[in-house]
Length: 239
Image (cartoon, rainbow, N blue to C red):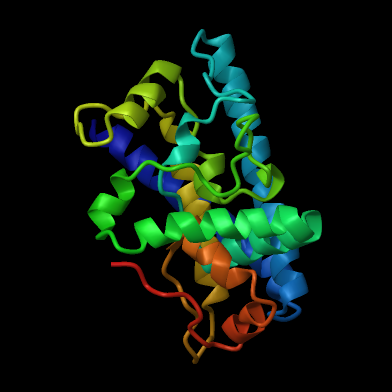
């Protein structure tokens, strides 16, 4: 058990360093929106490739993933994302949608935020309500390419466990059967990535996470990312 714990610690350190170095590669030339988005895009590419390799191996070992297009049980829970993830997501949404489609996403985000913003964090994490980016009829993510890290590493081996978690949110004995490796990899790469963002910054680079619904409403403001890069706190801290 001790050897396994040491192995996990070393693995986490490696993923942290990978996230740090990846961010440094793009931000070395300057902390700009363009460099940040390029780094974010590469971070997602790396974690997606890692996930694909892991899932391929899991399938060969008789432990295939239950995740597939149209399965949206996990898209009803609270998802927390970092500021840079929310800005990347907002940029994607603004580029892909306009007019009534964009208005509908904003309305759905506002509707969910009006409920979740009033809940303490513990209850918020248990709350089940469709993500504002979930297609209401076809059950797929409308911003799949830009989804946050938490969504990318939420990989289940048992669809029934995900359904049970959605239907009984207050039962602590029921939880989705998620693969550990993608969770470790994504979380630690994100931590390393953000550690590099904070390097040598004397101002306040807002670090805490926000919900997709609240964060997206803020990030869709065209001025928000420039203010955040300049050191201003633009997101409300959840409690």
